[in-house]
Length: 86
Image (cartoon, rainbow, N blue to C red; front, side, top):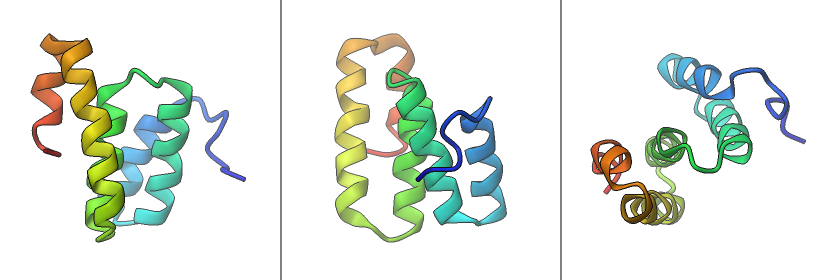
């Protein structure tokens, strides 16, 4: 059960948790964000970064590929934000 599902602004919460170094909590908040807004490239990007901070390379690759797919779909916005993950 993810306590951030239904949160008013899980992206903002995830960003704050990431800043505080609470990586496991940040992952939950960011997962809630991409479930709520699956087209939010920033949410996907931060989720990948958080997994990288957690040294989970398998998930980093997965989220980099998801983010990269948004480059094709929404080139002007996503390209600027996803290259940090790639």
